Length: 140
Image (cartoon, rainbow, N blue to C red; front, top):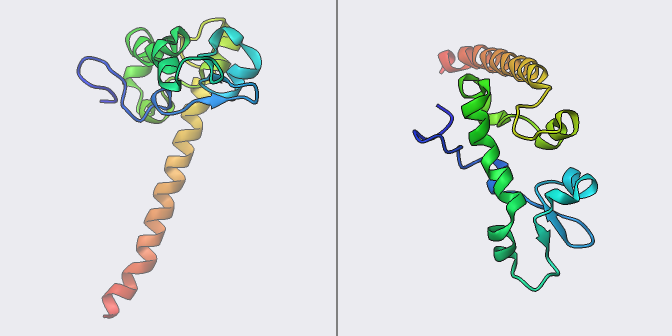
């Protein structure tokens, strides 16, 4: 399972650990939001409030934090084997294409194909590496 029993997202989701700050001090989830969507700014670091207060009081940040749970409840993400890496995909791309950041990324199938291919390559590489190292272990 990719979330706690009460559907809270895993703690390693970037929503909880990452922000972007532009040269003018505007803070948002990533640089794509800063350059394109001022309504999604969390605030500005040059404002009188502290950075912690800015993050705690931001309605835009609360919307970002609510996205993973919404995706798990209303989209097919909960059953996806790649949820722990994808988290529903890129919110800015989703919003740019659909006008709604509370739906999964329109490139979901592309992500799945990429992750599946990478997984196969990694497993094949690990398997080949083990086969090469086995004879050396037997000789000892």
